[in-house]
Image (cartoon, rainbow, N blue to C red):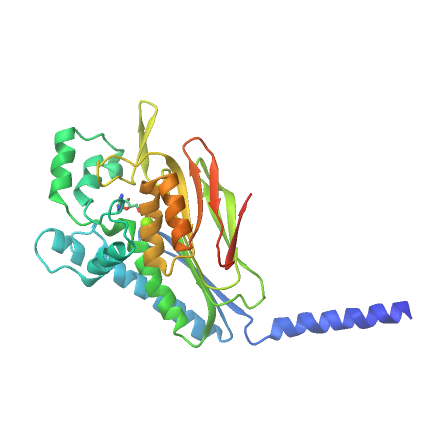
Length: 311
Ligand code: AMP
Ligand code: MG
């Protein structure tokens, strides 16, 4: 009797597994390509593999289109032409500026730091600019959309995937920003790891969410150089032109879209621990940060769309 029960239960389990394997939403397409100056991964779920693959291709095309406009490291992008006075302001730049204004982060976030970033020379090993050089660079005010471009490009990708009926759920990630939409067909949670800022191959915290989520991290370990034991990194305080002090890494969770998310991680990194915490609490955002003494602070989601677990 007991044995028969087990056999029946076993048969039911096998049938369920077979059903899961044949479920109409069982196909997963994963692709990783070099774009936006980094590796971008797309994972898309649905039923029709060929149709999902073509949606994923389109998503990469959409990101490449944003990159072509905003890449200030390429002399013939629309943003570079605008910087040289040889073209109109691209709408993507105006979009970033108006989002920063709407989010009221102008004290901490500026798209006019191109010459200041160049003065620090992060690309070729780094150098500490003279005060006069920094003053001139801050006055020059060239456009650098680097604090928000990935978020904007990932929005374009996720829009393509969301509007394609072949795709039921997807995750796009450029490392520092990750967006998802829909729920994973196996009923599992989306899991997004936050890197240890002093051991970036290790995960120090994990975000878990059932549905669509946005996660962005800004850190002092992504582009930096050291002089005399001091770390000079790429997230600059727009009021001084110097690297923002006080934090090693900051992650914003639950912003409306990739653009807001990317702007907010950069801005709140500059804002520092206390201002970032009150901004997150006032705006209903999740937050996870590590300060310069290695202490962690988390602000949970008031709406319970996601959890943050420190590993
Ligand atoms: P993220 O990794 O999104 O925080 O962006 C950092 C990049 O944004 C830097 O490499 C610069 O190109 C640019 N950036 C640096 N400081 C700022 C700032 N305060 N506001 C806006 N963009 C910035
Ligand atoms: Mg950013």
